[in-house]
Structures are given as structure tokens and as C-alpha cells.
Length: 301
Image (cartoon, rainbow, N blue to C red; front, side, top):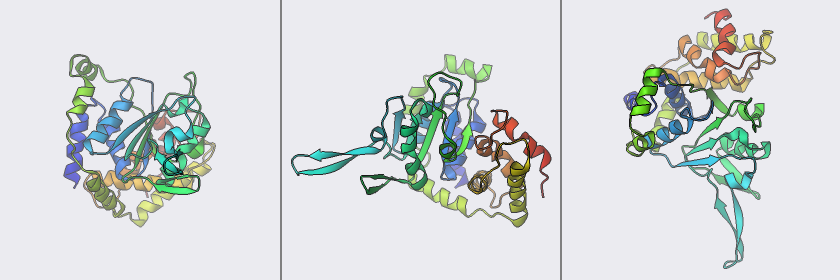
């Protein structure tokens, strides 16, 4: 099964050039059955990454462009009166797809942002007292512009916590940017992609990830990390129990991608910046810098 993952990574890296680690983290997030937040300036490939993964996984894909006037009904759908049958009929919104790109989510008001909460957490939506299950697998990739840009509404902590990881793509290295400038159009490349995995196969992989072994010493190390964030003056508040579960889940997926059946400390360290960076508040916004004190001061048990 891991060989299928390697083929998927290889195909994605042929479209998104020079971003091997970010692509690996995105796939790790998928395997962990959580959601991904990409924070960066416009034009660095956030939408391209989401569309590429959807094509390679054969998933139904829908992009929702968040704006200041978008309404919750524009996301989850609404009940419309059917004059012929004299009853209200629910018309599903774009959230009813296997992969949803919530583009520029912090351009919308908090009311619209909160419409995603139940869908992301519960894998369902409720409209007028009726609950509708979302298709499986279900994965949200949200993009947001840096908070200093005009017209942004910062995501509240409750919303941020729904994302397993936050990553940044950044500018490409010069050699990769040259390939982008003279190479084939990325949209054409995406259209020519063939699925490397099917949705039901992805669900099998997600089930295998949950079976990855976590030893007691590894749990001790994980708890030491969590306790450090709660006691250190570096942070305004520490990691929650849910954040601890997120860290372990991501580490399991990382170990699975490395073809191991047990988590090792290096797995926790590899995913820590992306998992903890948006959950810890400090004087820095860079994920690597935020977790640097943890990696430097918490000993591997």
C-alpha cells in the first residue's frame, strides 16, 4: 500500500515543483483523515496543490471562493419549496463533495466560516433540524492569506483547531521557477493526471494508519512535549488534549508513509511544526520558530 503512496507523491511532485515536504505533509494529513490549512500569499500554488491531489485520488472536487458576502447557505445548501409537490426540498451545497477547497477562507465573515465547523468535525451538516451525511472520504483544504493583508477576518482558535496541519508553500527556488516559466501550463498537466489511488483505497489506507503502534516511551515523549507547552513562558497557552491526539495521529501517518509499523520520536518531530504551529501563540508566526524551543529543550525519553 505504501508503494501506491510513493507513486502519488511522485506524480504530485511533477506538477508542484520543489515542494516535496509540503506535498508529503498534505498527503500525511489525508491519511490521518483530518483537514489542511495552507497559509500563504496569492499565486504560489495553493489551489493547484488541492486540485492535483483531488485528481490523483479520483475524488469529487469543488472549490468554494470565500468572499465578504458569502452566506452559510452558499456553502452547505438550502431547502427550496417545490411548488409541484408542495414541499421543501433540500438542495445540497458545494460542501457535499469528497474534497473541498475553501479558498481564501479568511476573506469571509465569521458567520460563514463557522458554517464549515460541523462539516469538518462531524462529517455531516444539519439544515432545519435534518442531518445530512457528507460523502466519504471527506477532506477540506482551506487557504488563507496572511493576516496583515487587507480584508481578512482571522480564523478563531476553535476553527483553527479543526485543521490538523497548517503549512506554507513559499516562493519556489530559482531552478524550479525557471521550469515553471518555460514549462507546460500547470492546469493542462492537472487535466492529464490519472488517479493513483481511488477513494475506497484511500479509506483502506486511513484504516491502516490507525493501526500503527505507539509505544509507552513514545507516549511519554508526546506528553512531555504537551506539558512543556503548558508550562513554558514561551507560549500564551499550551496544547490541548485534542492537539495531543492530532500530533499522535499525524505521527502515525508519517510513520506509515515511511513503511514502518510503529511511531518513532523522529515522526513526532517531523510533523510537530505543522501540527502545533497554528495552535501555539507566541511572539512568532513561523511554525519552525514556534516549535524550536520544544525540540531544543524536551529530551527524547
